[in-house]
Length: 195
Image (cartoon, rainbow, N blue to C red; front, side, top):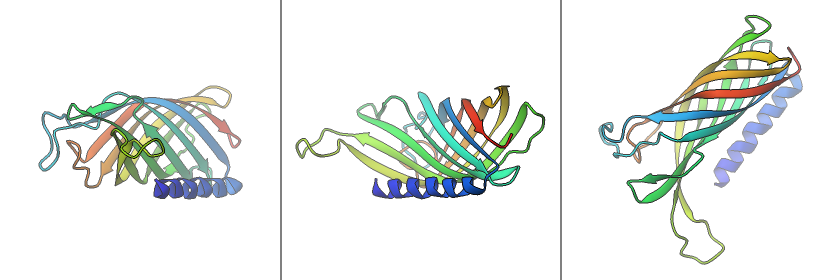
């Protein structure tokens, strides 16, 4: 957990440094669906358990350093716990840091394409056995690649909605049915400056 905290601090610090020179800063909140290969048809060498399913909220921040190119940080998680193999509750979390390209097409429309790296962090919840001051979960972390995109539509001033899609390539994700996952959904956001 300390490594994830350090990674998040470094990512946010990089984002804040970029905003000092940035032309535009965006913040979004969204609701998504996470999909992956079915648990009844796992990839070779993977467990019959899908990481997908359920509502997946997300937050993202980006700063365009030039008019079209910038950096992005995202965090998404499964809103409710799922059952691993029908017995152990679990919840996946996804952290990613990306380069983003967002050219302006019209005053109202702006496509967005991003690629980067991140971490899939899954909590498997277990009963604590050390008393009251200990965690009640075991964590697995997997390095991942991330590709995503969306189309911003400015509905009112600097407020926009963004249909979006994200693809995760998760290294050694053998607890689940596939090394791939996808997230589809809609975000609402606000642009600070630069429009």
